[in-house]
Length: 268
Image (cartoon, rainbow, N blue to C red; front, side, top):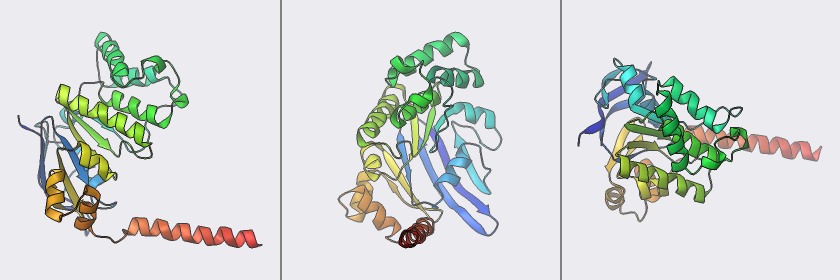
């Protein structure tokens, strides 16, 4: 069993700012890999390089044996992706969203129909496949996005905060599907999340990135043992610090300013 993702000495600079600073990791086939870090740590930049959106400044990447900078078509056919922000067309039915994706990836019509029906059954949406997506709940949309990402039978599934904002029951259902998929079909999963309990429960291995560098890597159990912490969230904080990052601090400041403005308006 080889590596489906191999990253060596990866660097991405924006002028004088180093967003990804000599990062190295690998993900074996069929494994579930959590890529964790505070906002602004370099997670999104790394994912963009893995998925052909950005070219690295230096270093090497192999995704399913292909170089994303020179073999973009082969790399893009190798993976499916579920974005953090919704990417479905609300004015189409669930089936039409799936069918359009299959057409764009060149999946032959008979195979496309068969896989669409199989995936709707897999994520428990068969009875709602003809409904407009705008009638779906947030959890149903996420399940549909997972199904769509798998339509062209990718070897790798990228998930960028796939359960953000969902209730615990729906989060558990989605991860059950993904774990089943990895176990039964050998799909390699690369995901980001701020829910440390998810990473603790489902990841075979995690890497923690902070200020563009990998600061720890191993199984969740190994990271907890290294930091002498009872859970992965405490281990994460021990590795990355307690300080609120600039992005969050700015958001908090904006909320405080808005709160003062609203209270002032109320007194007038």
